[in-house]
Length: 394
Image: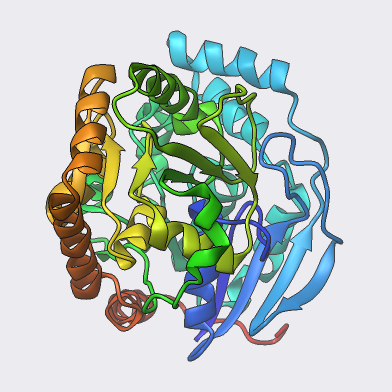
């Protein structure tokens, strides 16, 4: 099939999140399908400033078509419309304006879908909350598959989404919790699959790359208050002050918030793949403090190395992942954080057992052949009822 994957930003240097999920799925789809990435020139997820050249390029087997962002996100205007939409009874026009202000605002991308969308057998959209998906999917609804990457946050409750979630011909969900969150607004007749994300067998990691950090617990990903990192740092510094055990908190990822100087906090920034592998393998515990997730890929990656996870119980998705895998512990508040972390660090055998149970869960559910069989089954089911693609412009 000829497929388009539409995503707000895309690049080999954009790690994790829906962008990483899209790239990995697209690369695997490209082994048996003709795949085009339709995206913007943005790299920064806060401002949406233009970064990549507009036009066509390639990344491995993927054809990429990028469209410029016509204006950066105005944070003051976005905050004002968010206050209006989430604290008052907003009109339909105000709700739609929220999606415009959230961006990235790229009208040329929408025009491309309007003019060229019928060239594709199916058009897959990632992340409903962004401009490209909210306004783009209705233009090709007769061949659209939505990967919502939905989280339990205020956006998901907007009335405008009742109409939106009824439009796609198929849905790919990341977890049972996400399907529950969105599924009631999707018609029962719409094909759906819970697919998560695939993983390869773990690569052998060179322990010496991270030896000077040990012993450590690890946070890997975007360092941002929206990811719960401010709370993680507060809880950790309070726990460290008690002095029961000395362990470092390693933060690896791009920083979008100030990080205090502390002798037990180590900041690495964006790390190369081999260092990432070593960090995951040698960590005593993988920390995941985010209150909002549709699927934590880094938790799966930690389990791939047999590393247990400690997650924020206020996020139903994270708690559900840990419970299904029996691959770690969860906390709600500073006292539970301290108790769970102390237990994992002082009971090495129990921690190792949790990590290996997580690894067994990945083997059962998240190897690429298993994931891609589910995705291909959904795509072929949807394609049977989609009008034939217009190949004249291909």
